[in-house]
Image (cartoon, rainbow, N blue to C red; front, side):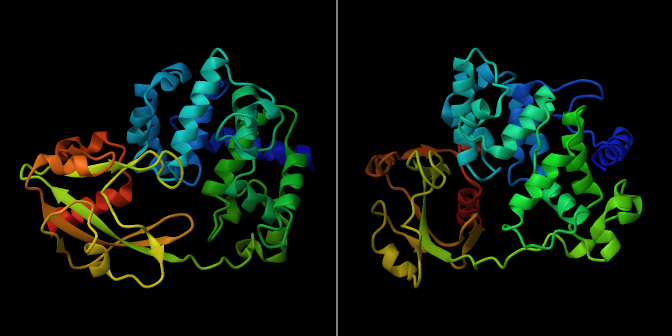
Length: 350
């Protein structure tokens, strides 16, 4: 069964594989650095979004040693917009760790997982795609394919152990890297979350969920807890030339090391912007703008009110720890998260 499964899938893959900027041509192998870089970027992010970021990173830092030598602020700035910024900090830390090893990624699972930001899936993907080791890389696409092939009706996340075990049994001895990418492609283009294209699926003859007529209902998921909403007030202080006051966030935690517009603490529950306006980061004639800036993080929703003021002196920046002026033409060069770009845009357009 496993050999037939792999043969059918690899035959399909040889004809229908996606052309992706980090993927080697047929018969060739991608260097570990590029496999690792793409896999970190693809965590919680779509292929369509990652493409341009990946190209820019590789052009700017073509080797792991080049990335390791880059200042963290430069890496965070280049990452801005991809979200989940802990990945960027771990990316830089991992590059430095690999550079200390002479620029060589370990091939064994334990060695890979000891590196910053590399978990079970990423370690397996690197082992399979970069080194062609028999490793099972199970991401969301692969979970869906396996759940349907085996008609696993246990809801996620409880089904993960069963899915992972079955996925490992199906990995072939040869072409493990191609097989890993074939499973990803199948889930992304054929065995899709809604309206799977079972008619053209190379594995349809062995798909138990298809035979039972429940393919589109799998994988099942336990109900998610509702995300809480946090609220705060962002203070956009601008000079007459348009420069805005930014400050650096603490190096650890949410958006660690990124730049931001000064704001009040983000808290759950009732929030009155007028109360926060009474305690601004610097003395100025603050105007509370109408409307909110909304943004969603992994674990919570955020609603920010926005206050705007014009600076009467450059020295106001010295009153904010880590504060510095940034002209609008240089914002793209700063490690500014998407939510802060939304805040500045609202203050500029209001």
